[in-house]
Length: 173
Length: 193
Image 1 (cartoon, each protein chain N blue to C red):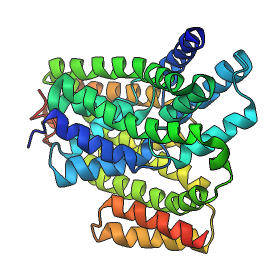
Image 2: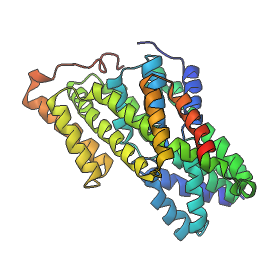
Image 3: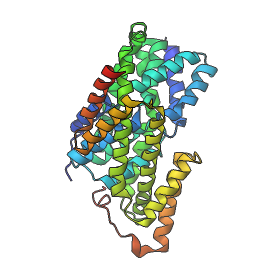
Image 4: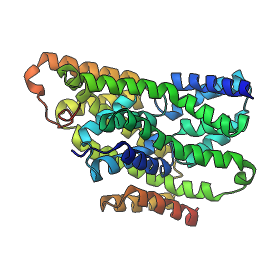
């Protein structure tokens, strides 16, 4: 049991270490490490996990780690994999936060950070398009999108928009 | 700007983590709503910088944003509790589903609900992009950088980290070329520790 836990932790530590660019970036890695490398999962199973991870709350990386860990070694496995996948990212972003706290007043750092603002907007634009491609383009989706737009324009809280869209999904799909 | 206590951040990020479907990017509109629009813990300029910085660390972007913002707003305890808040709802829900997977597989209601959530999430992220764009794209240089980054990300599939580093480098070079034209316009720098 503890052997499986250790191996799980190690595998997801690796996944956390090398997956830049958000949760979806780790998918090919999980495929290589856990399916091809260790045979812990089948490709079909992994496809199902991704589908579950998408429609449950939270980052896809955390969802995937919890699910794979749980399948292999129960709640302890889920916890070990989740902690492991977050360990390196937390360390790196913690160091970034610390460096920013120390050097945030240097003109070059301020300039570099201001230079990042347009990139973040471009990232959000790209993310919008990526998710847009996954939407079934039909009248129901269009209606939900239109309602969401009106609600957000009227400053309705995003939580209500999400809850309302989920309710409409249950009714319409 | 108001300062939250670490426990406030835990509560906020638990809520954000529990209600965002479709991965970490879907959390960004909610984070902006809670932290910028409603509670004024930071401004749009600082928030948008944090988004780009989060791409400089590996792993889930929502977790990285939580650590960066948590530390900035409430120190190490803030960073740890924010990350916990983002991760715990996901962990609990998935543990429950994994434990009852046989029963869960036959259900279609979650897929139906998510089919409804997905188009709404597109609109949510698009709105966040426009609102943050208003704060970030204030001059011709910013628009040019936005266009270049969009082309690099979408058409050439350049790695986000490379885009972030290039943009930071370009901005520093620009500072050196014309030191007078880059005085602080946004207020994002003023309250950085």
